[in-house]
Length: 201
Image (tube, rainbow, N blue to C red; front, side):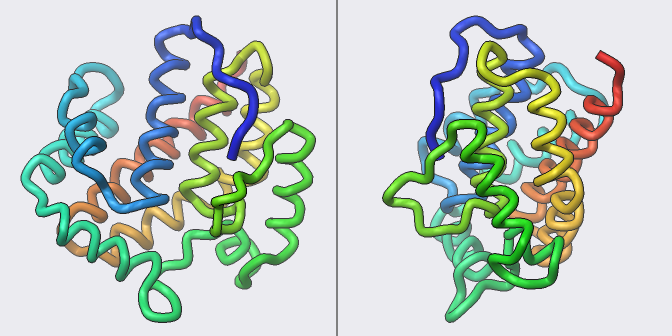
């Protein structure tokens, strides 16, 4: 996805939220690279509530010792597979039970209204969990372009209603290992975001 660049000056909390969405997008759209692993390890553990701090520590601990070749194989088994992966990380599947149904059409309309365009090299539908996290990263990171209400409405319409279930499925699919802790971290963050949008601003 592409849209307007993020604002260069952001409150620390919004910068952190945008960064977490970007990180989840990177973890869910491709196998973890050495550069991404080094970035995760370099981030301080401070901040956040107890649940998010623990899930973040578990993510760092797991990736710091993970074999990236095995992580890539896990990614393939989970999301690609032979014909299809173990999980289908698409909003339409969770909301309607089928690929490329009405939820995807509604998402495409909203993305168009917000000024997002699908990159030519993109092969996944726009309702892929990782792609949606990338969109939210841009929305949160550009408050001059996207209001709080825009954030809240996009999250409620296209993410909050199904991504906890998706991360639960990811946790169950990998009883141990890197993608289980990705699921735990993602679930904790989505729950925090739900609480954030329930607050009166």
